[in-house]
Image (tube, rainbow, N blue to C red; front, top):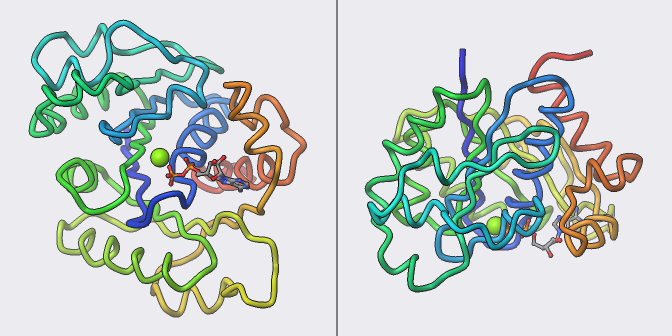
Length: 236
Ligand code: ADP
Ligand code: MG
């Protein structure tokens, strides 16, 4: 059965797009048929990490009623289907977020796992993504402001009736000021399903437009994301 997972955080810059892109590729490496969609239609950057920038037809064209979803799906690394939102402000202005729900349903039918990269905040796209998804993964950084925003996303997810798969703690450098996994689980009341370290390879891979798990598979962050993917699909 196909499942759709929304990756959200409340706060901007926690690593949602990094995790979405690399988790999608990691799941594909384990043989799953995967799609990843950029629901951050205003500040789209999934396509940059996936090495697919500048595509002629994007999600924003589809949401504007100007294109068919089939024409906005591109094959990326490891055969992952990527639905970029495009960086054109003009196209974003014409996009109607209400159409996102039917777009998500259409892609859901094509793959085993659909990853939805949500924008920061709790705007329309995030709410539609979470309510359409089967499960939520909340990405947090080990600091209180990030955790408090995650609490809002978790509360909204519960209200929408979507399952909470768990939290990923990203950019961990084990400094004494950081919140630990136990504390984060206690505050959020959800399991931490993975810890991704602060790792300079993340930015290097992004600069090359190649997913980290392909470019630096042995890097600490790539290994952590592969472990999360394995856990999600029950690979030992
Ligand atoms: P979001 O989608 O939540 O806004 P991004 O995935 O775009 O966040 O990440 C924000 C910035 O943080 C990017 O420059 C990215 O390269 C960097 N980053 C994300 N995760 C890590 C990490 N584990 N180690 C180092 N840099 C990271
Ligand atoms: Mg993002």
